[in-house]
Amino acid sequence: MQLSSDIRSLSITNLEKILLRENFEKYRATQIFDWLTKENIHSFEQMKNLPKELIHFLNSRFKINNVVIQLIKKSRDGTVKFLLSLPDNNVIEAVLIPTEKRITACVSSQVGCSLDCDFCATSKIKRMRNLDFYEIFDQLMILNFESLKLFGRPISNIVFMGMGEPLLNYKNVLKSIEMICSKKGIGISKKKITVSTSGMSKIIKILADKNVKFNLAVSLHSAIEKTRNEIMPFSKDFPLSDLVDSLNYWYQKTKSKITIEYLVWEAINDNISHVNSLVNFCKRVPSKVNLIEFNDIGNLKFKSAKNRWIQKYIEILELNKISVTVRRSRGEDINAACGQLANKL
Ligand code: SAH
Image (cartoon, rainbow, N blue to C red):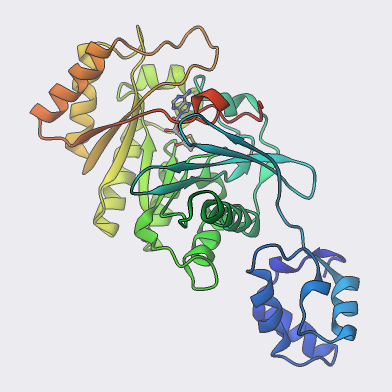
C-alpha cells in the first residue's frame, strides 16, 4: 500500500481488513465511509465518532483529497459555472443549468481532452489525466450542495458533457454513477443520467454488455465519413460503420434509444446531402436527434449555419418520423456553454 493514498481509492472491505490488522474494530470502516460521503469533510479530525488513536492512524496512512471550489461564475440566464481545483493543482469545470422543471449538472470526466474536435475549446487543452471516481463523485456532491443553496432544489439530471471523453475513462465514470445513485450519494435514478461520447464504438459495446441503465448520447455532427474525419480527425480510427454496429448493439441490450448530438455549420454540413445522410443514419440506428446551438470558440472555420438550414434539418427529419429537438445554448456569457469549457474565466 502506497503511503498517503486517498482513502477513497480503497474498497470498504479492504479498509476493514487494514483496520482489523491494526487492531481496530471492523465497523469503523463503515463509519469512516459514511463520513466520506458527506459534504465538507476535509479531515479525519472531523469524524466525530472515531477514537483519537484511529484518527492518528488514518492520518499516518491516508489523505482525503477533496475537490475544492476555486471560483463560481453566474450567467445572466441563471447558469452557474464552477472552477474546481484538484489536489494536484489541476483544474476542471462543471456547470449547473437550471430550468423551471430541472436542474442539470454537467460534469467533467478528464482533465483536458485527448480528442481533437476542431470546434471544441476543451480539445485545445492537453489531456493531463483521468479523473478518479471519487473526484467525479465530489464534483456531483458539490454541485448538489450548491444547487440546494442557490435554487432550493437538488440536481435532477446529470450529463457527462463537461471536459473530456467519458468513455476513455469509463471505469471511473461507472463507479461514480453507482455511488451518486446510491442512498449514500444523492439517490438519483440512472434514467436521469446521460453519458455523451464522441463515438468510441468498442467501449459502447463494453458498456452495453455491462447492462448499464443510463442514457447514451453520441456527438455525430456529420453522417458523411469524410466530413466527420475533417472536423473530428480522431474519428479516422473509428469508422461510421463500426459506430452504427455498436449503437445497434447498445439498443439491443438496453432497449434505450440513442441521442444523436448534431451541430450545423455554414459551408460544412448545411446542405441536402448531409441532411439525407443523417436521415439514413437515423434509420439504421434507433435514435432521436438533438440539434445543438453552436457556441463560437474563435475558430474562423466554424460558423453556425443560417436558421433556415436548421429548420430544413428539422423539417426533413420530422418528415421521416425521426424525433428531433433543439438544445438552446446556456451560459455563453461566462464561457459555460457546450464546447466552451477551457478554464477561461
Ligand atoms: N467528449 C464527449 C463529451 C463532451 S462534449 C463528446 O464528444 O460527446 C459535449 C457536447 O458538446 C458534444 O456533443 C460536443 O460535440 C458539443 N460541443 C463541442 N464544442 C461545441 C461548441 N463549440 N458548441 C456547441 N457544442 C459543442
